[in-house]
Length: 308
Image 1 (cartoon, rainbow, N blue to C red):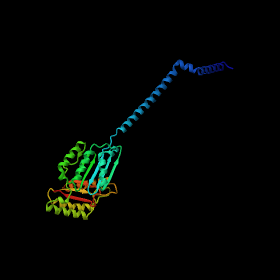
Image 2 (image 1 turned 135 degrees about the vertical axis):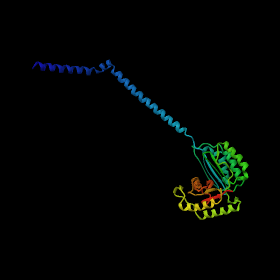
Image 3 (image 1 turned 60 degrees about the horizontal axis):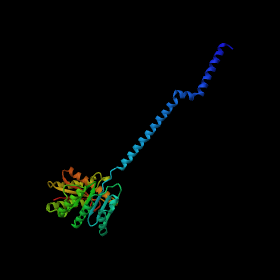
Image 4 (image 1 turned 90 degrees about the vertical axis):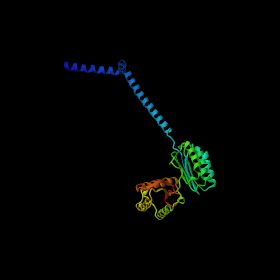
């Protein structure tokens, strides 16, 4: 065997012995080099990052829960039409069930013909105006107003009817209702929707013509009540021509519609249609004062009431 081969074998054997020694004592060597400490520190750092991430997530979740808990409740809603048949709708907080307003409504409906649809939800705020609202309803009933209505929505109050005879009393009550947090819609409370109140012969004649046109021609709307039907526009054009003959004439638009058994939805849709009619007459250069949707209170679909 040549000397070169012997030298090569010696080198191989030496390397092998060094590897075995290192492998057998690697923990000791690592300890001396501080490698195990570095590994532990890295592990601690990663653990800390995970813990911090968990804590941050918990904080965010807590904030979300607090945000949901602090969502502001909706304002109560109330509607009442006082006529031969009393219609009442409303959405109140459950605590209101034992309050003066609900008790009064229950007693009222025990002795009168009522459509009473009061609902309750824990997401509704408590009412501050129930006592003064009872006084308002009592006033309207005691005065025997032929037809009157009260609507409260988003803390706005709207009262309709021929209220001239009780003007002073109703002004005092609405002042209290304002202090309860309600805002009156419109500058005047006095409203007159009765054709019987029209005095002049000329106005009566014009009123009668318009009444006849609306009785003989149904005012229809396109699907979803977004626009006036083309055929109905022709009828409204003729009415516009009649109204424009009298300078500075003012009038109210009242819309009625029955949509199933949902009185609230009928009220909302009839108001939407009345507003569309008002915009139509405004484009014709006329001066409609009010657009009022009364839901399904009458079979007549649309009325145009000329003011004094």
